Structures are given as structure tokens and as C-alpha cells.
Length: 360
Image 1 (cartoon, rainbow, N blue to C red):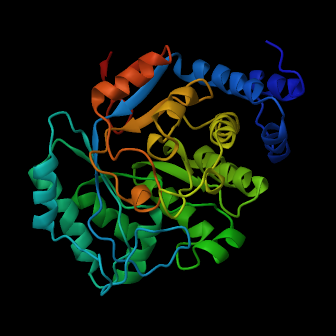
Image 2: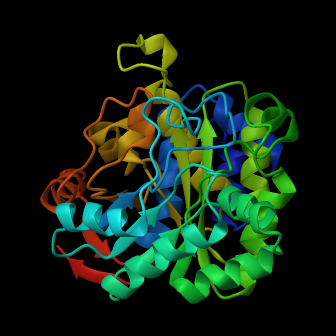
């Protein structure tokens, strides 16, 4: 297969040579999206054959109270603001019990940086869930939350992570990364962990034997070069530790569901970003198409552009839907299987660590 215009990049990929930031810029600017997609699909098939993974999971957001004021977030609340909430551990258990379905294998826990609660509160939420649902893997708290706990409790990052691990946390989600650029963070998320702090949390987690995930929130003020440098930071840390399981490009959501299409990322940008991610991140096993943000149908197309994972059932997603996400808050296992089969791929239900549970 010859990829005109990017033939030299295709040759590098096939020889196993690592792509540069400049290569990434060319892929973003190349006028034939399908050529970029075909190359990413070739790489993905080499890594994952025709398998596309998903998980039966449940999102849990224990609190929306947050000390940070990220400009892209419509989920956070101040402590005394209308709509603010903080669930006690018992209330979290009641929330899960009400929504529980057999087959759930992962609790995905993220929330606000609630400075009115002690670190022990966050630990007890995990402990209560692990004691009640010992067979469910707990993927809890982003690197930004861990950095917040470090400041809140006056503990080192390793001490925070060991405490969480002892309570039942087995993996970290990839959130809080946004764009790993200090220029971007100063404008959009100045109260959150710095680039190096975010990376260091994952570095320590990997050294403690925890597998983690990485996200990238795209579609705001970042440059293409900043997106690519973000990918390179992840690639470099993966080279050092081997601890990342997946990379998840997240299309930013507008303030309201009624926002015009000009306020949303384009289908070209969504598919191209997935494809470029697959090509740049040669040492990360999976690129995830996040159906919550780009929609189920575009997620199905993403399987031709380098994606080998379409996330999970969720049960009730709140954060993207607090902005302008137009998707439903959950999909069933059968719907996820239908999406994957519709793309001519093999649905593989997995656990958090990509161990197959069932092949459909």
C-alpha cells in the first residue's frame, strides 16, 4: 500500500521507526484523511488484529465540589452553590446498588477536588466499594486528584498512592491531563497539577505496579504542536515505565447541548486525532474512541482509523453531559457489540487490564 504525500512517513512506520513531532504535523495537515486513517488502521491491526475491546463498567462521581476553576468544565460547583453535592460512602453504595447490573467489572471513579472533605473521605469511598464489591476492579482518581490529595493531606505522592492502593485502587484513569502544556494550563486549568506533576503521579503509580491510562482533551486553544508534544510526553514516559494501557483523545464539549456545530470538534478532527495518536504512540497498546464525546456512529468509524477500544457501558456519565454532550449516558453490552460487529471487527469484552472476558 502506498500512501502518497506521506509515503516517507509510512515507510518509517513500517520499519518501526519512531515518528517525530514534525511527522505528526504533516499527518495533521495532510489533505487526504483516508490515507492517514489507512496507515493507522494498518498499525492497529498489526498490534490488535481485528479485535476491538470494551468493558462493562460504572462511572461514579462522588462529589462535584471543586477548588479548581478550569475554564472548560461545566460540572464543578462551589461548596454552597446550587446543585453542589458530596455523597457519603454509604450514599455511594446506595447509588451503585440502585444502578447495579450483573457483569459490571470496573468502577471508574473521578470527581471534584473537594477541599472541604479530608483525604480520608476519598479513601473510605474506595474502601466501602471494595469491601462490598470485592470482585470489581476500582479505577479511581486522576493524577490531578492525586496531586490535590498530596496537598490536602500533606503526604508525598508515593504515600497517597500507597494509601489508595491499600484501600482497593488498582488502576488510575487518565483524566486531568487536558493538554500537557504549561501555556495551555496557565490559561485553562491554572489550579490543577502541572505537566511534570501529572506525569510524576503516573510514573510513581507505574513503579508501584499500577497500570494507568492517559487522556488528551482537544479542541480548545491548543496548537497542533501542543497536541503532538502531549503525545510525545506520554510516549516517553511509556518508554520509561511501560505502565500505560491506553490513550484516550477526548473531544471537548461545548457549554450547552444546543450549541451550534461550529462550537464542536469536526468529524475530520476527531478521526484524524485518533489516527495520529495511533501512529505517534507506537508503544501504547490501545487508542480508545470515547463514544460519549464523539457519538456511537463516529466511534464505529474510528475503528477504521486506529482505535482498538470503545470504552464501556458507563451506566451514568455526568461530566461530559454536564457540558454539551449529545450522546446518551450509557450503552448496553449488546449495543457495544453491535457497533463493533457493524465495523467488521471482533468484539472482545475485557477487564480493566485488557484480559479477555468473552469474545463475541
